[in-house]
Length: 133
Image 1 (tube, one colour):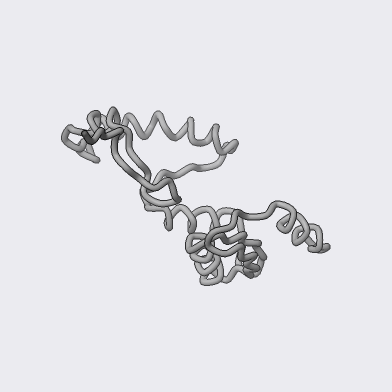
Image 2 (tube, rainbow, N blue to C red):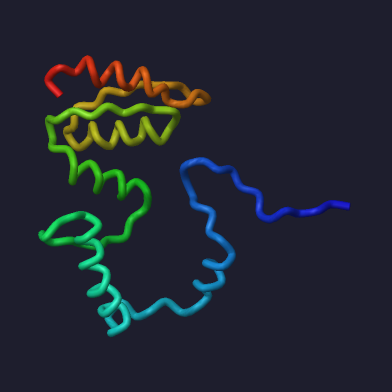
């Protein structure tokens, strides 16, 4: 007798496993993005977002995939010509580095291969050797 223990998935960066409760809650028509419901939701989210970001400045909400999040993080935290250290343990780390490089950011990749975890001591050594920070 075969017994199933739920959906099989690989726990890696990438598609997020959505719990059944969330999937069930999503089984409804999408709201009209120009209707009062979405406008009210957005108006309530902006102050919370500003609090999380610890800013009195403007905040914006936009929808994107993981790569869009990478671009947003890089463009909000690093200026062209500045440098980043990318500890890479696979394709995602290298992708982040390529995106940063395409944005004019100086990239140093610390490659740990495809099957080893990032070594905090090696990362620390590289950061300590950067005397100009």
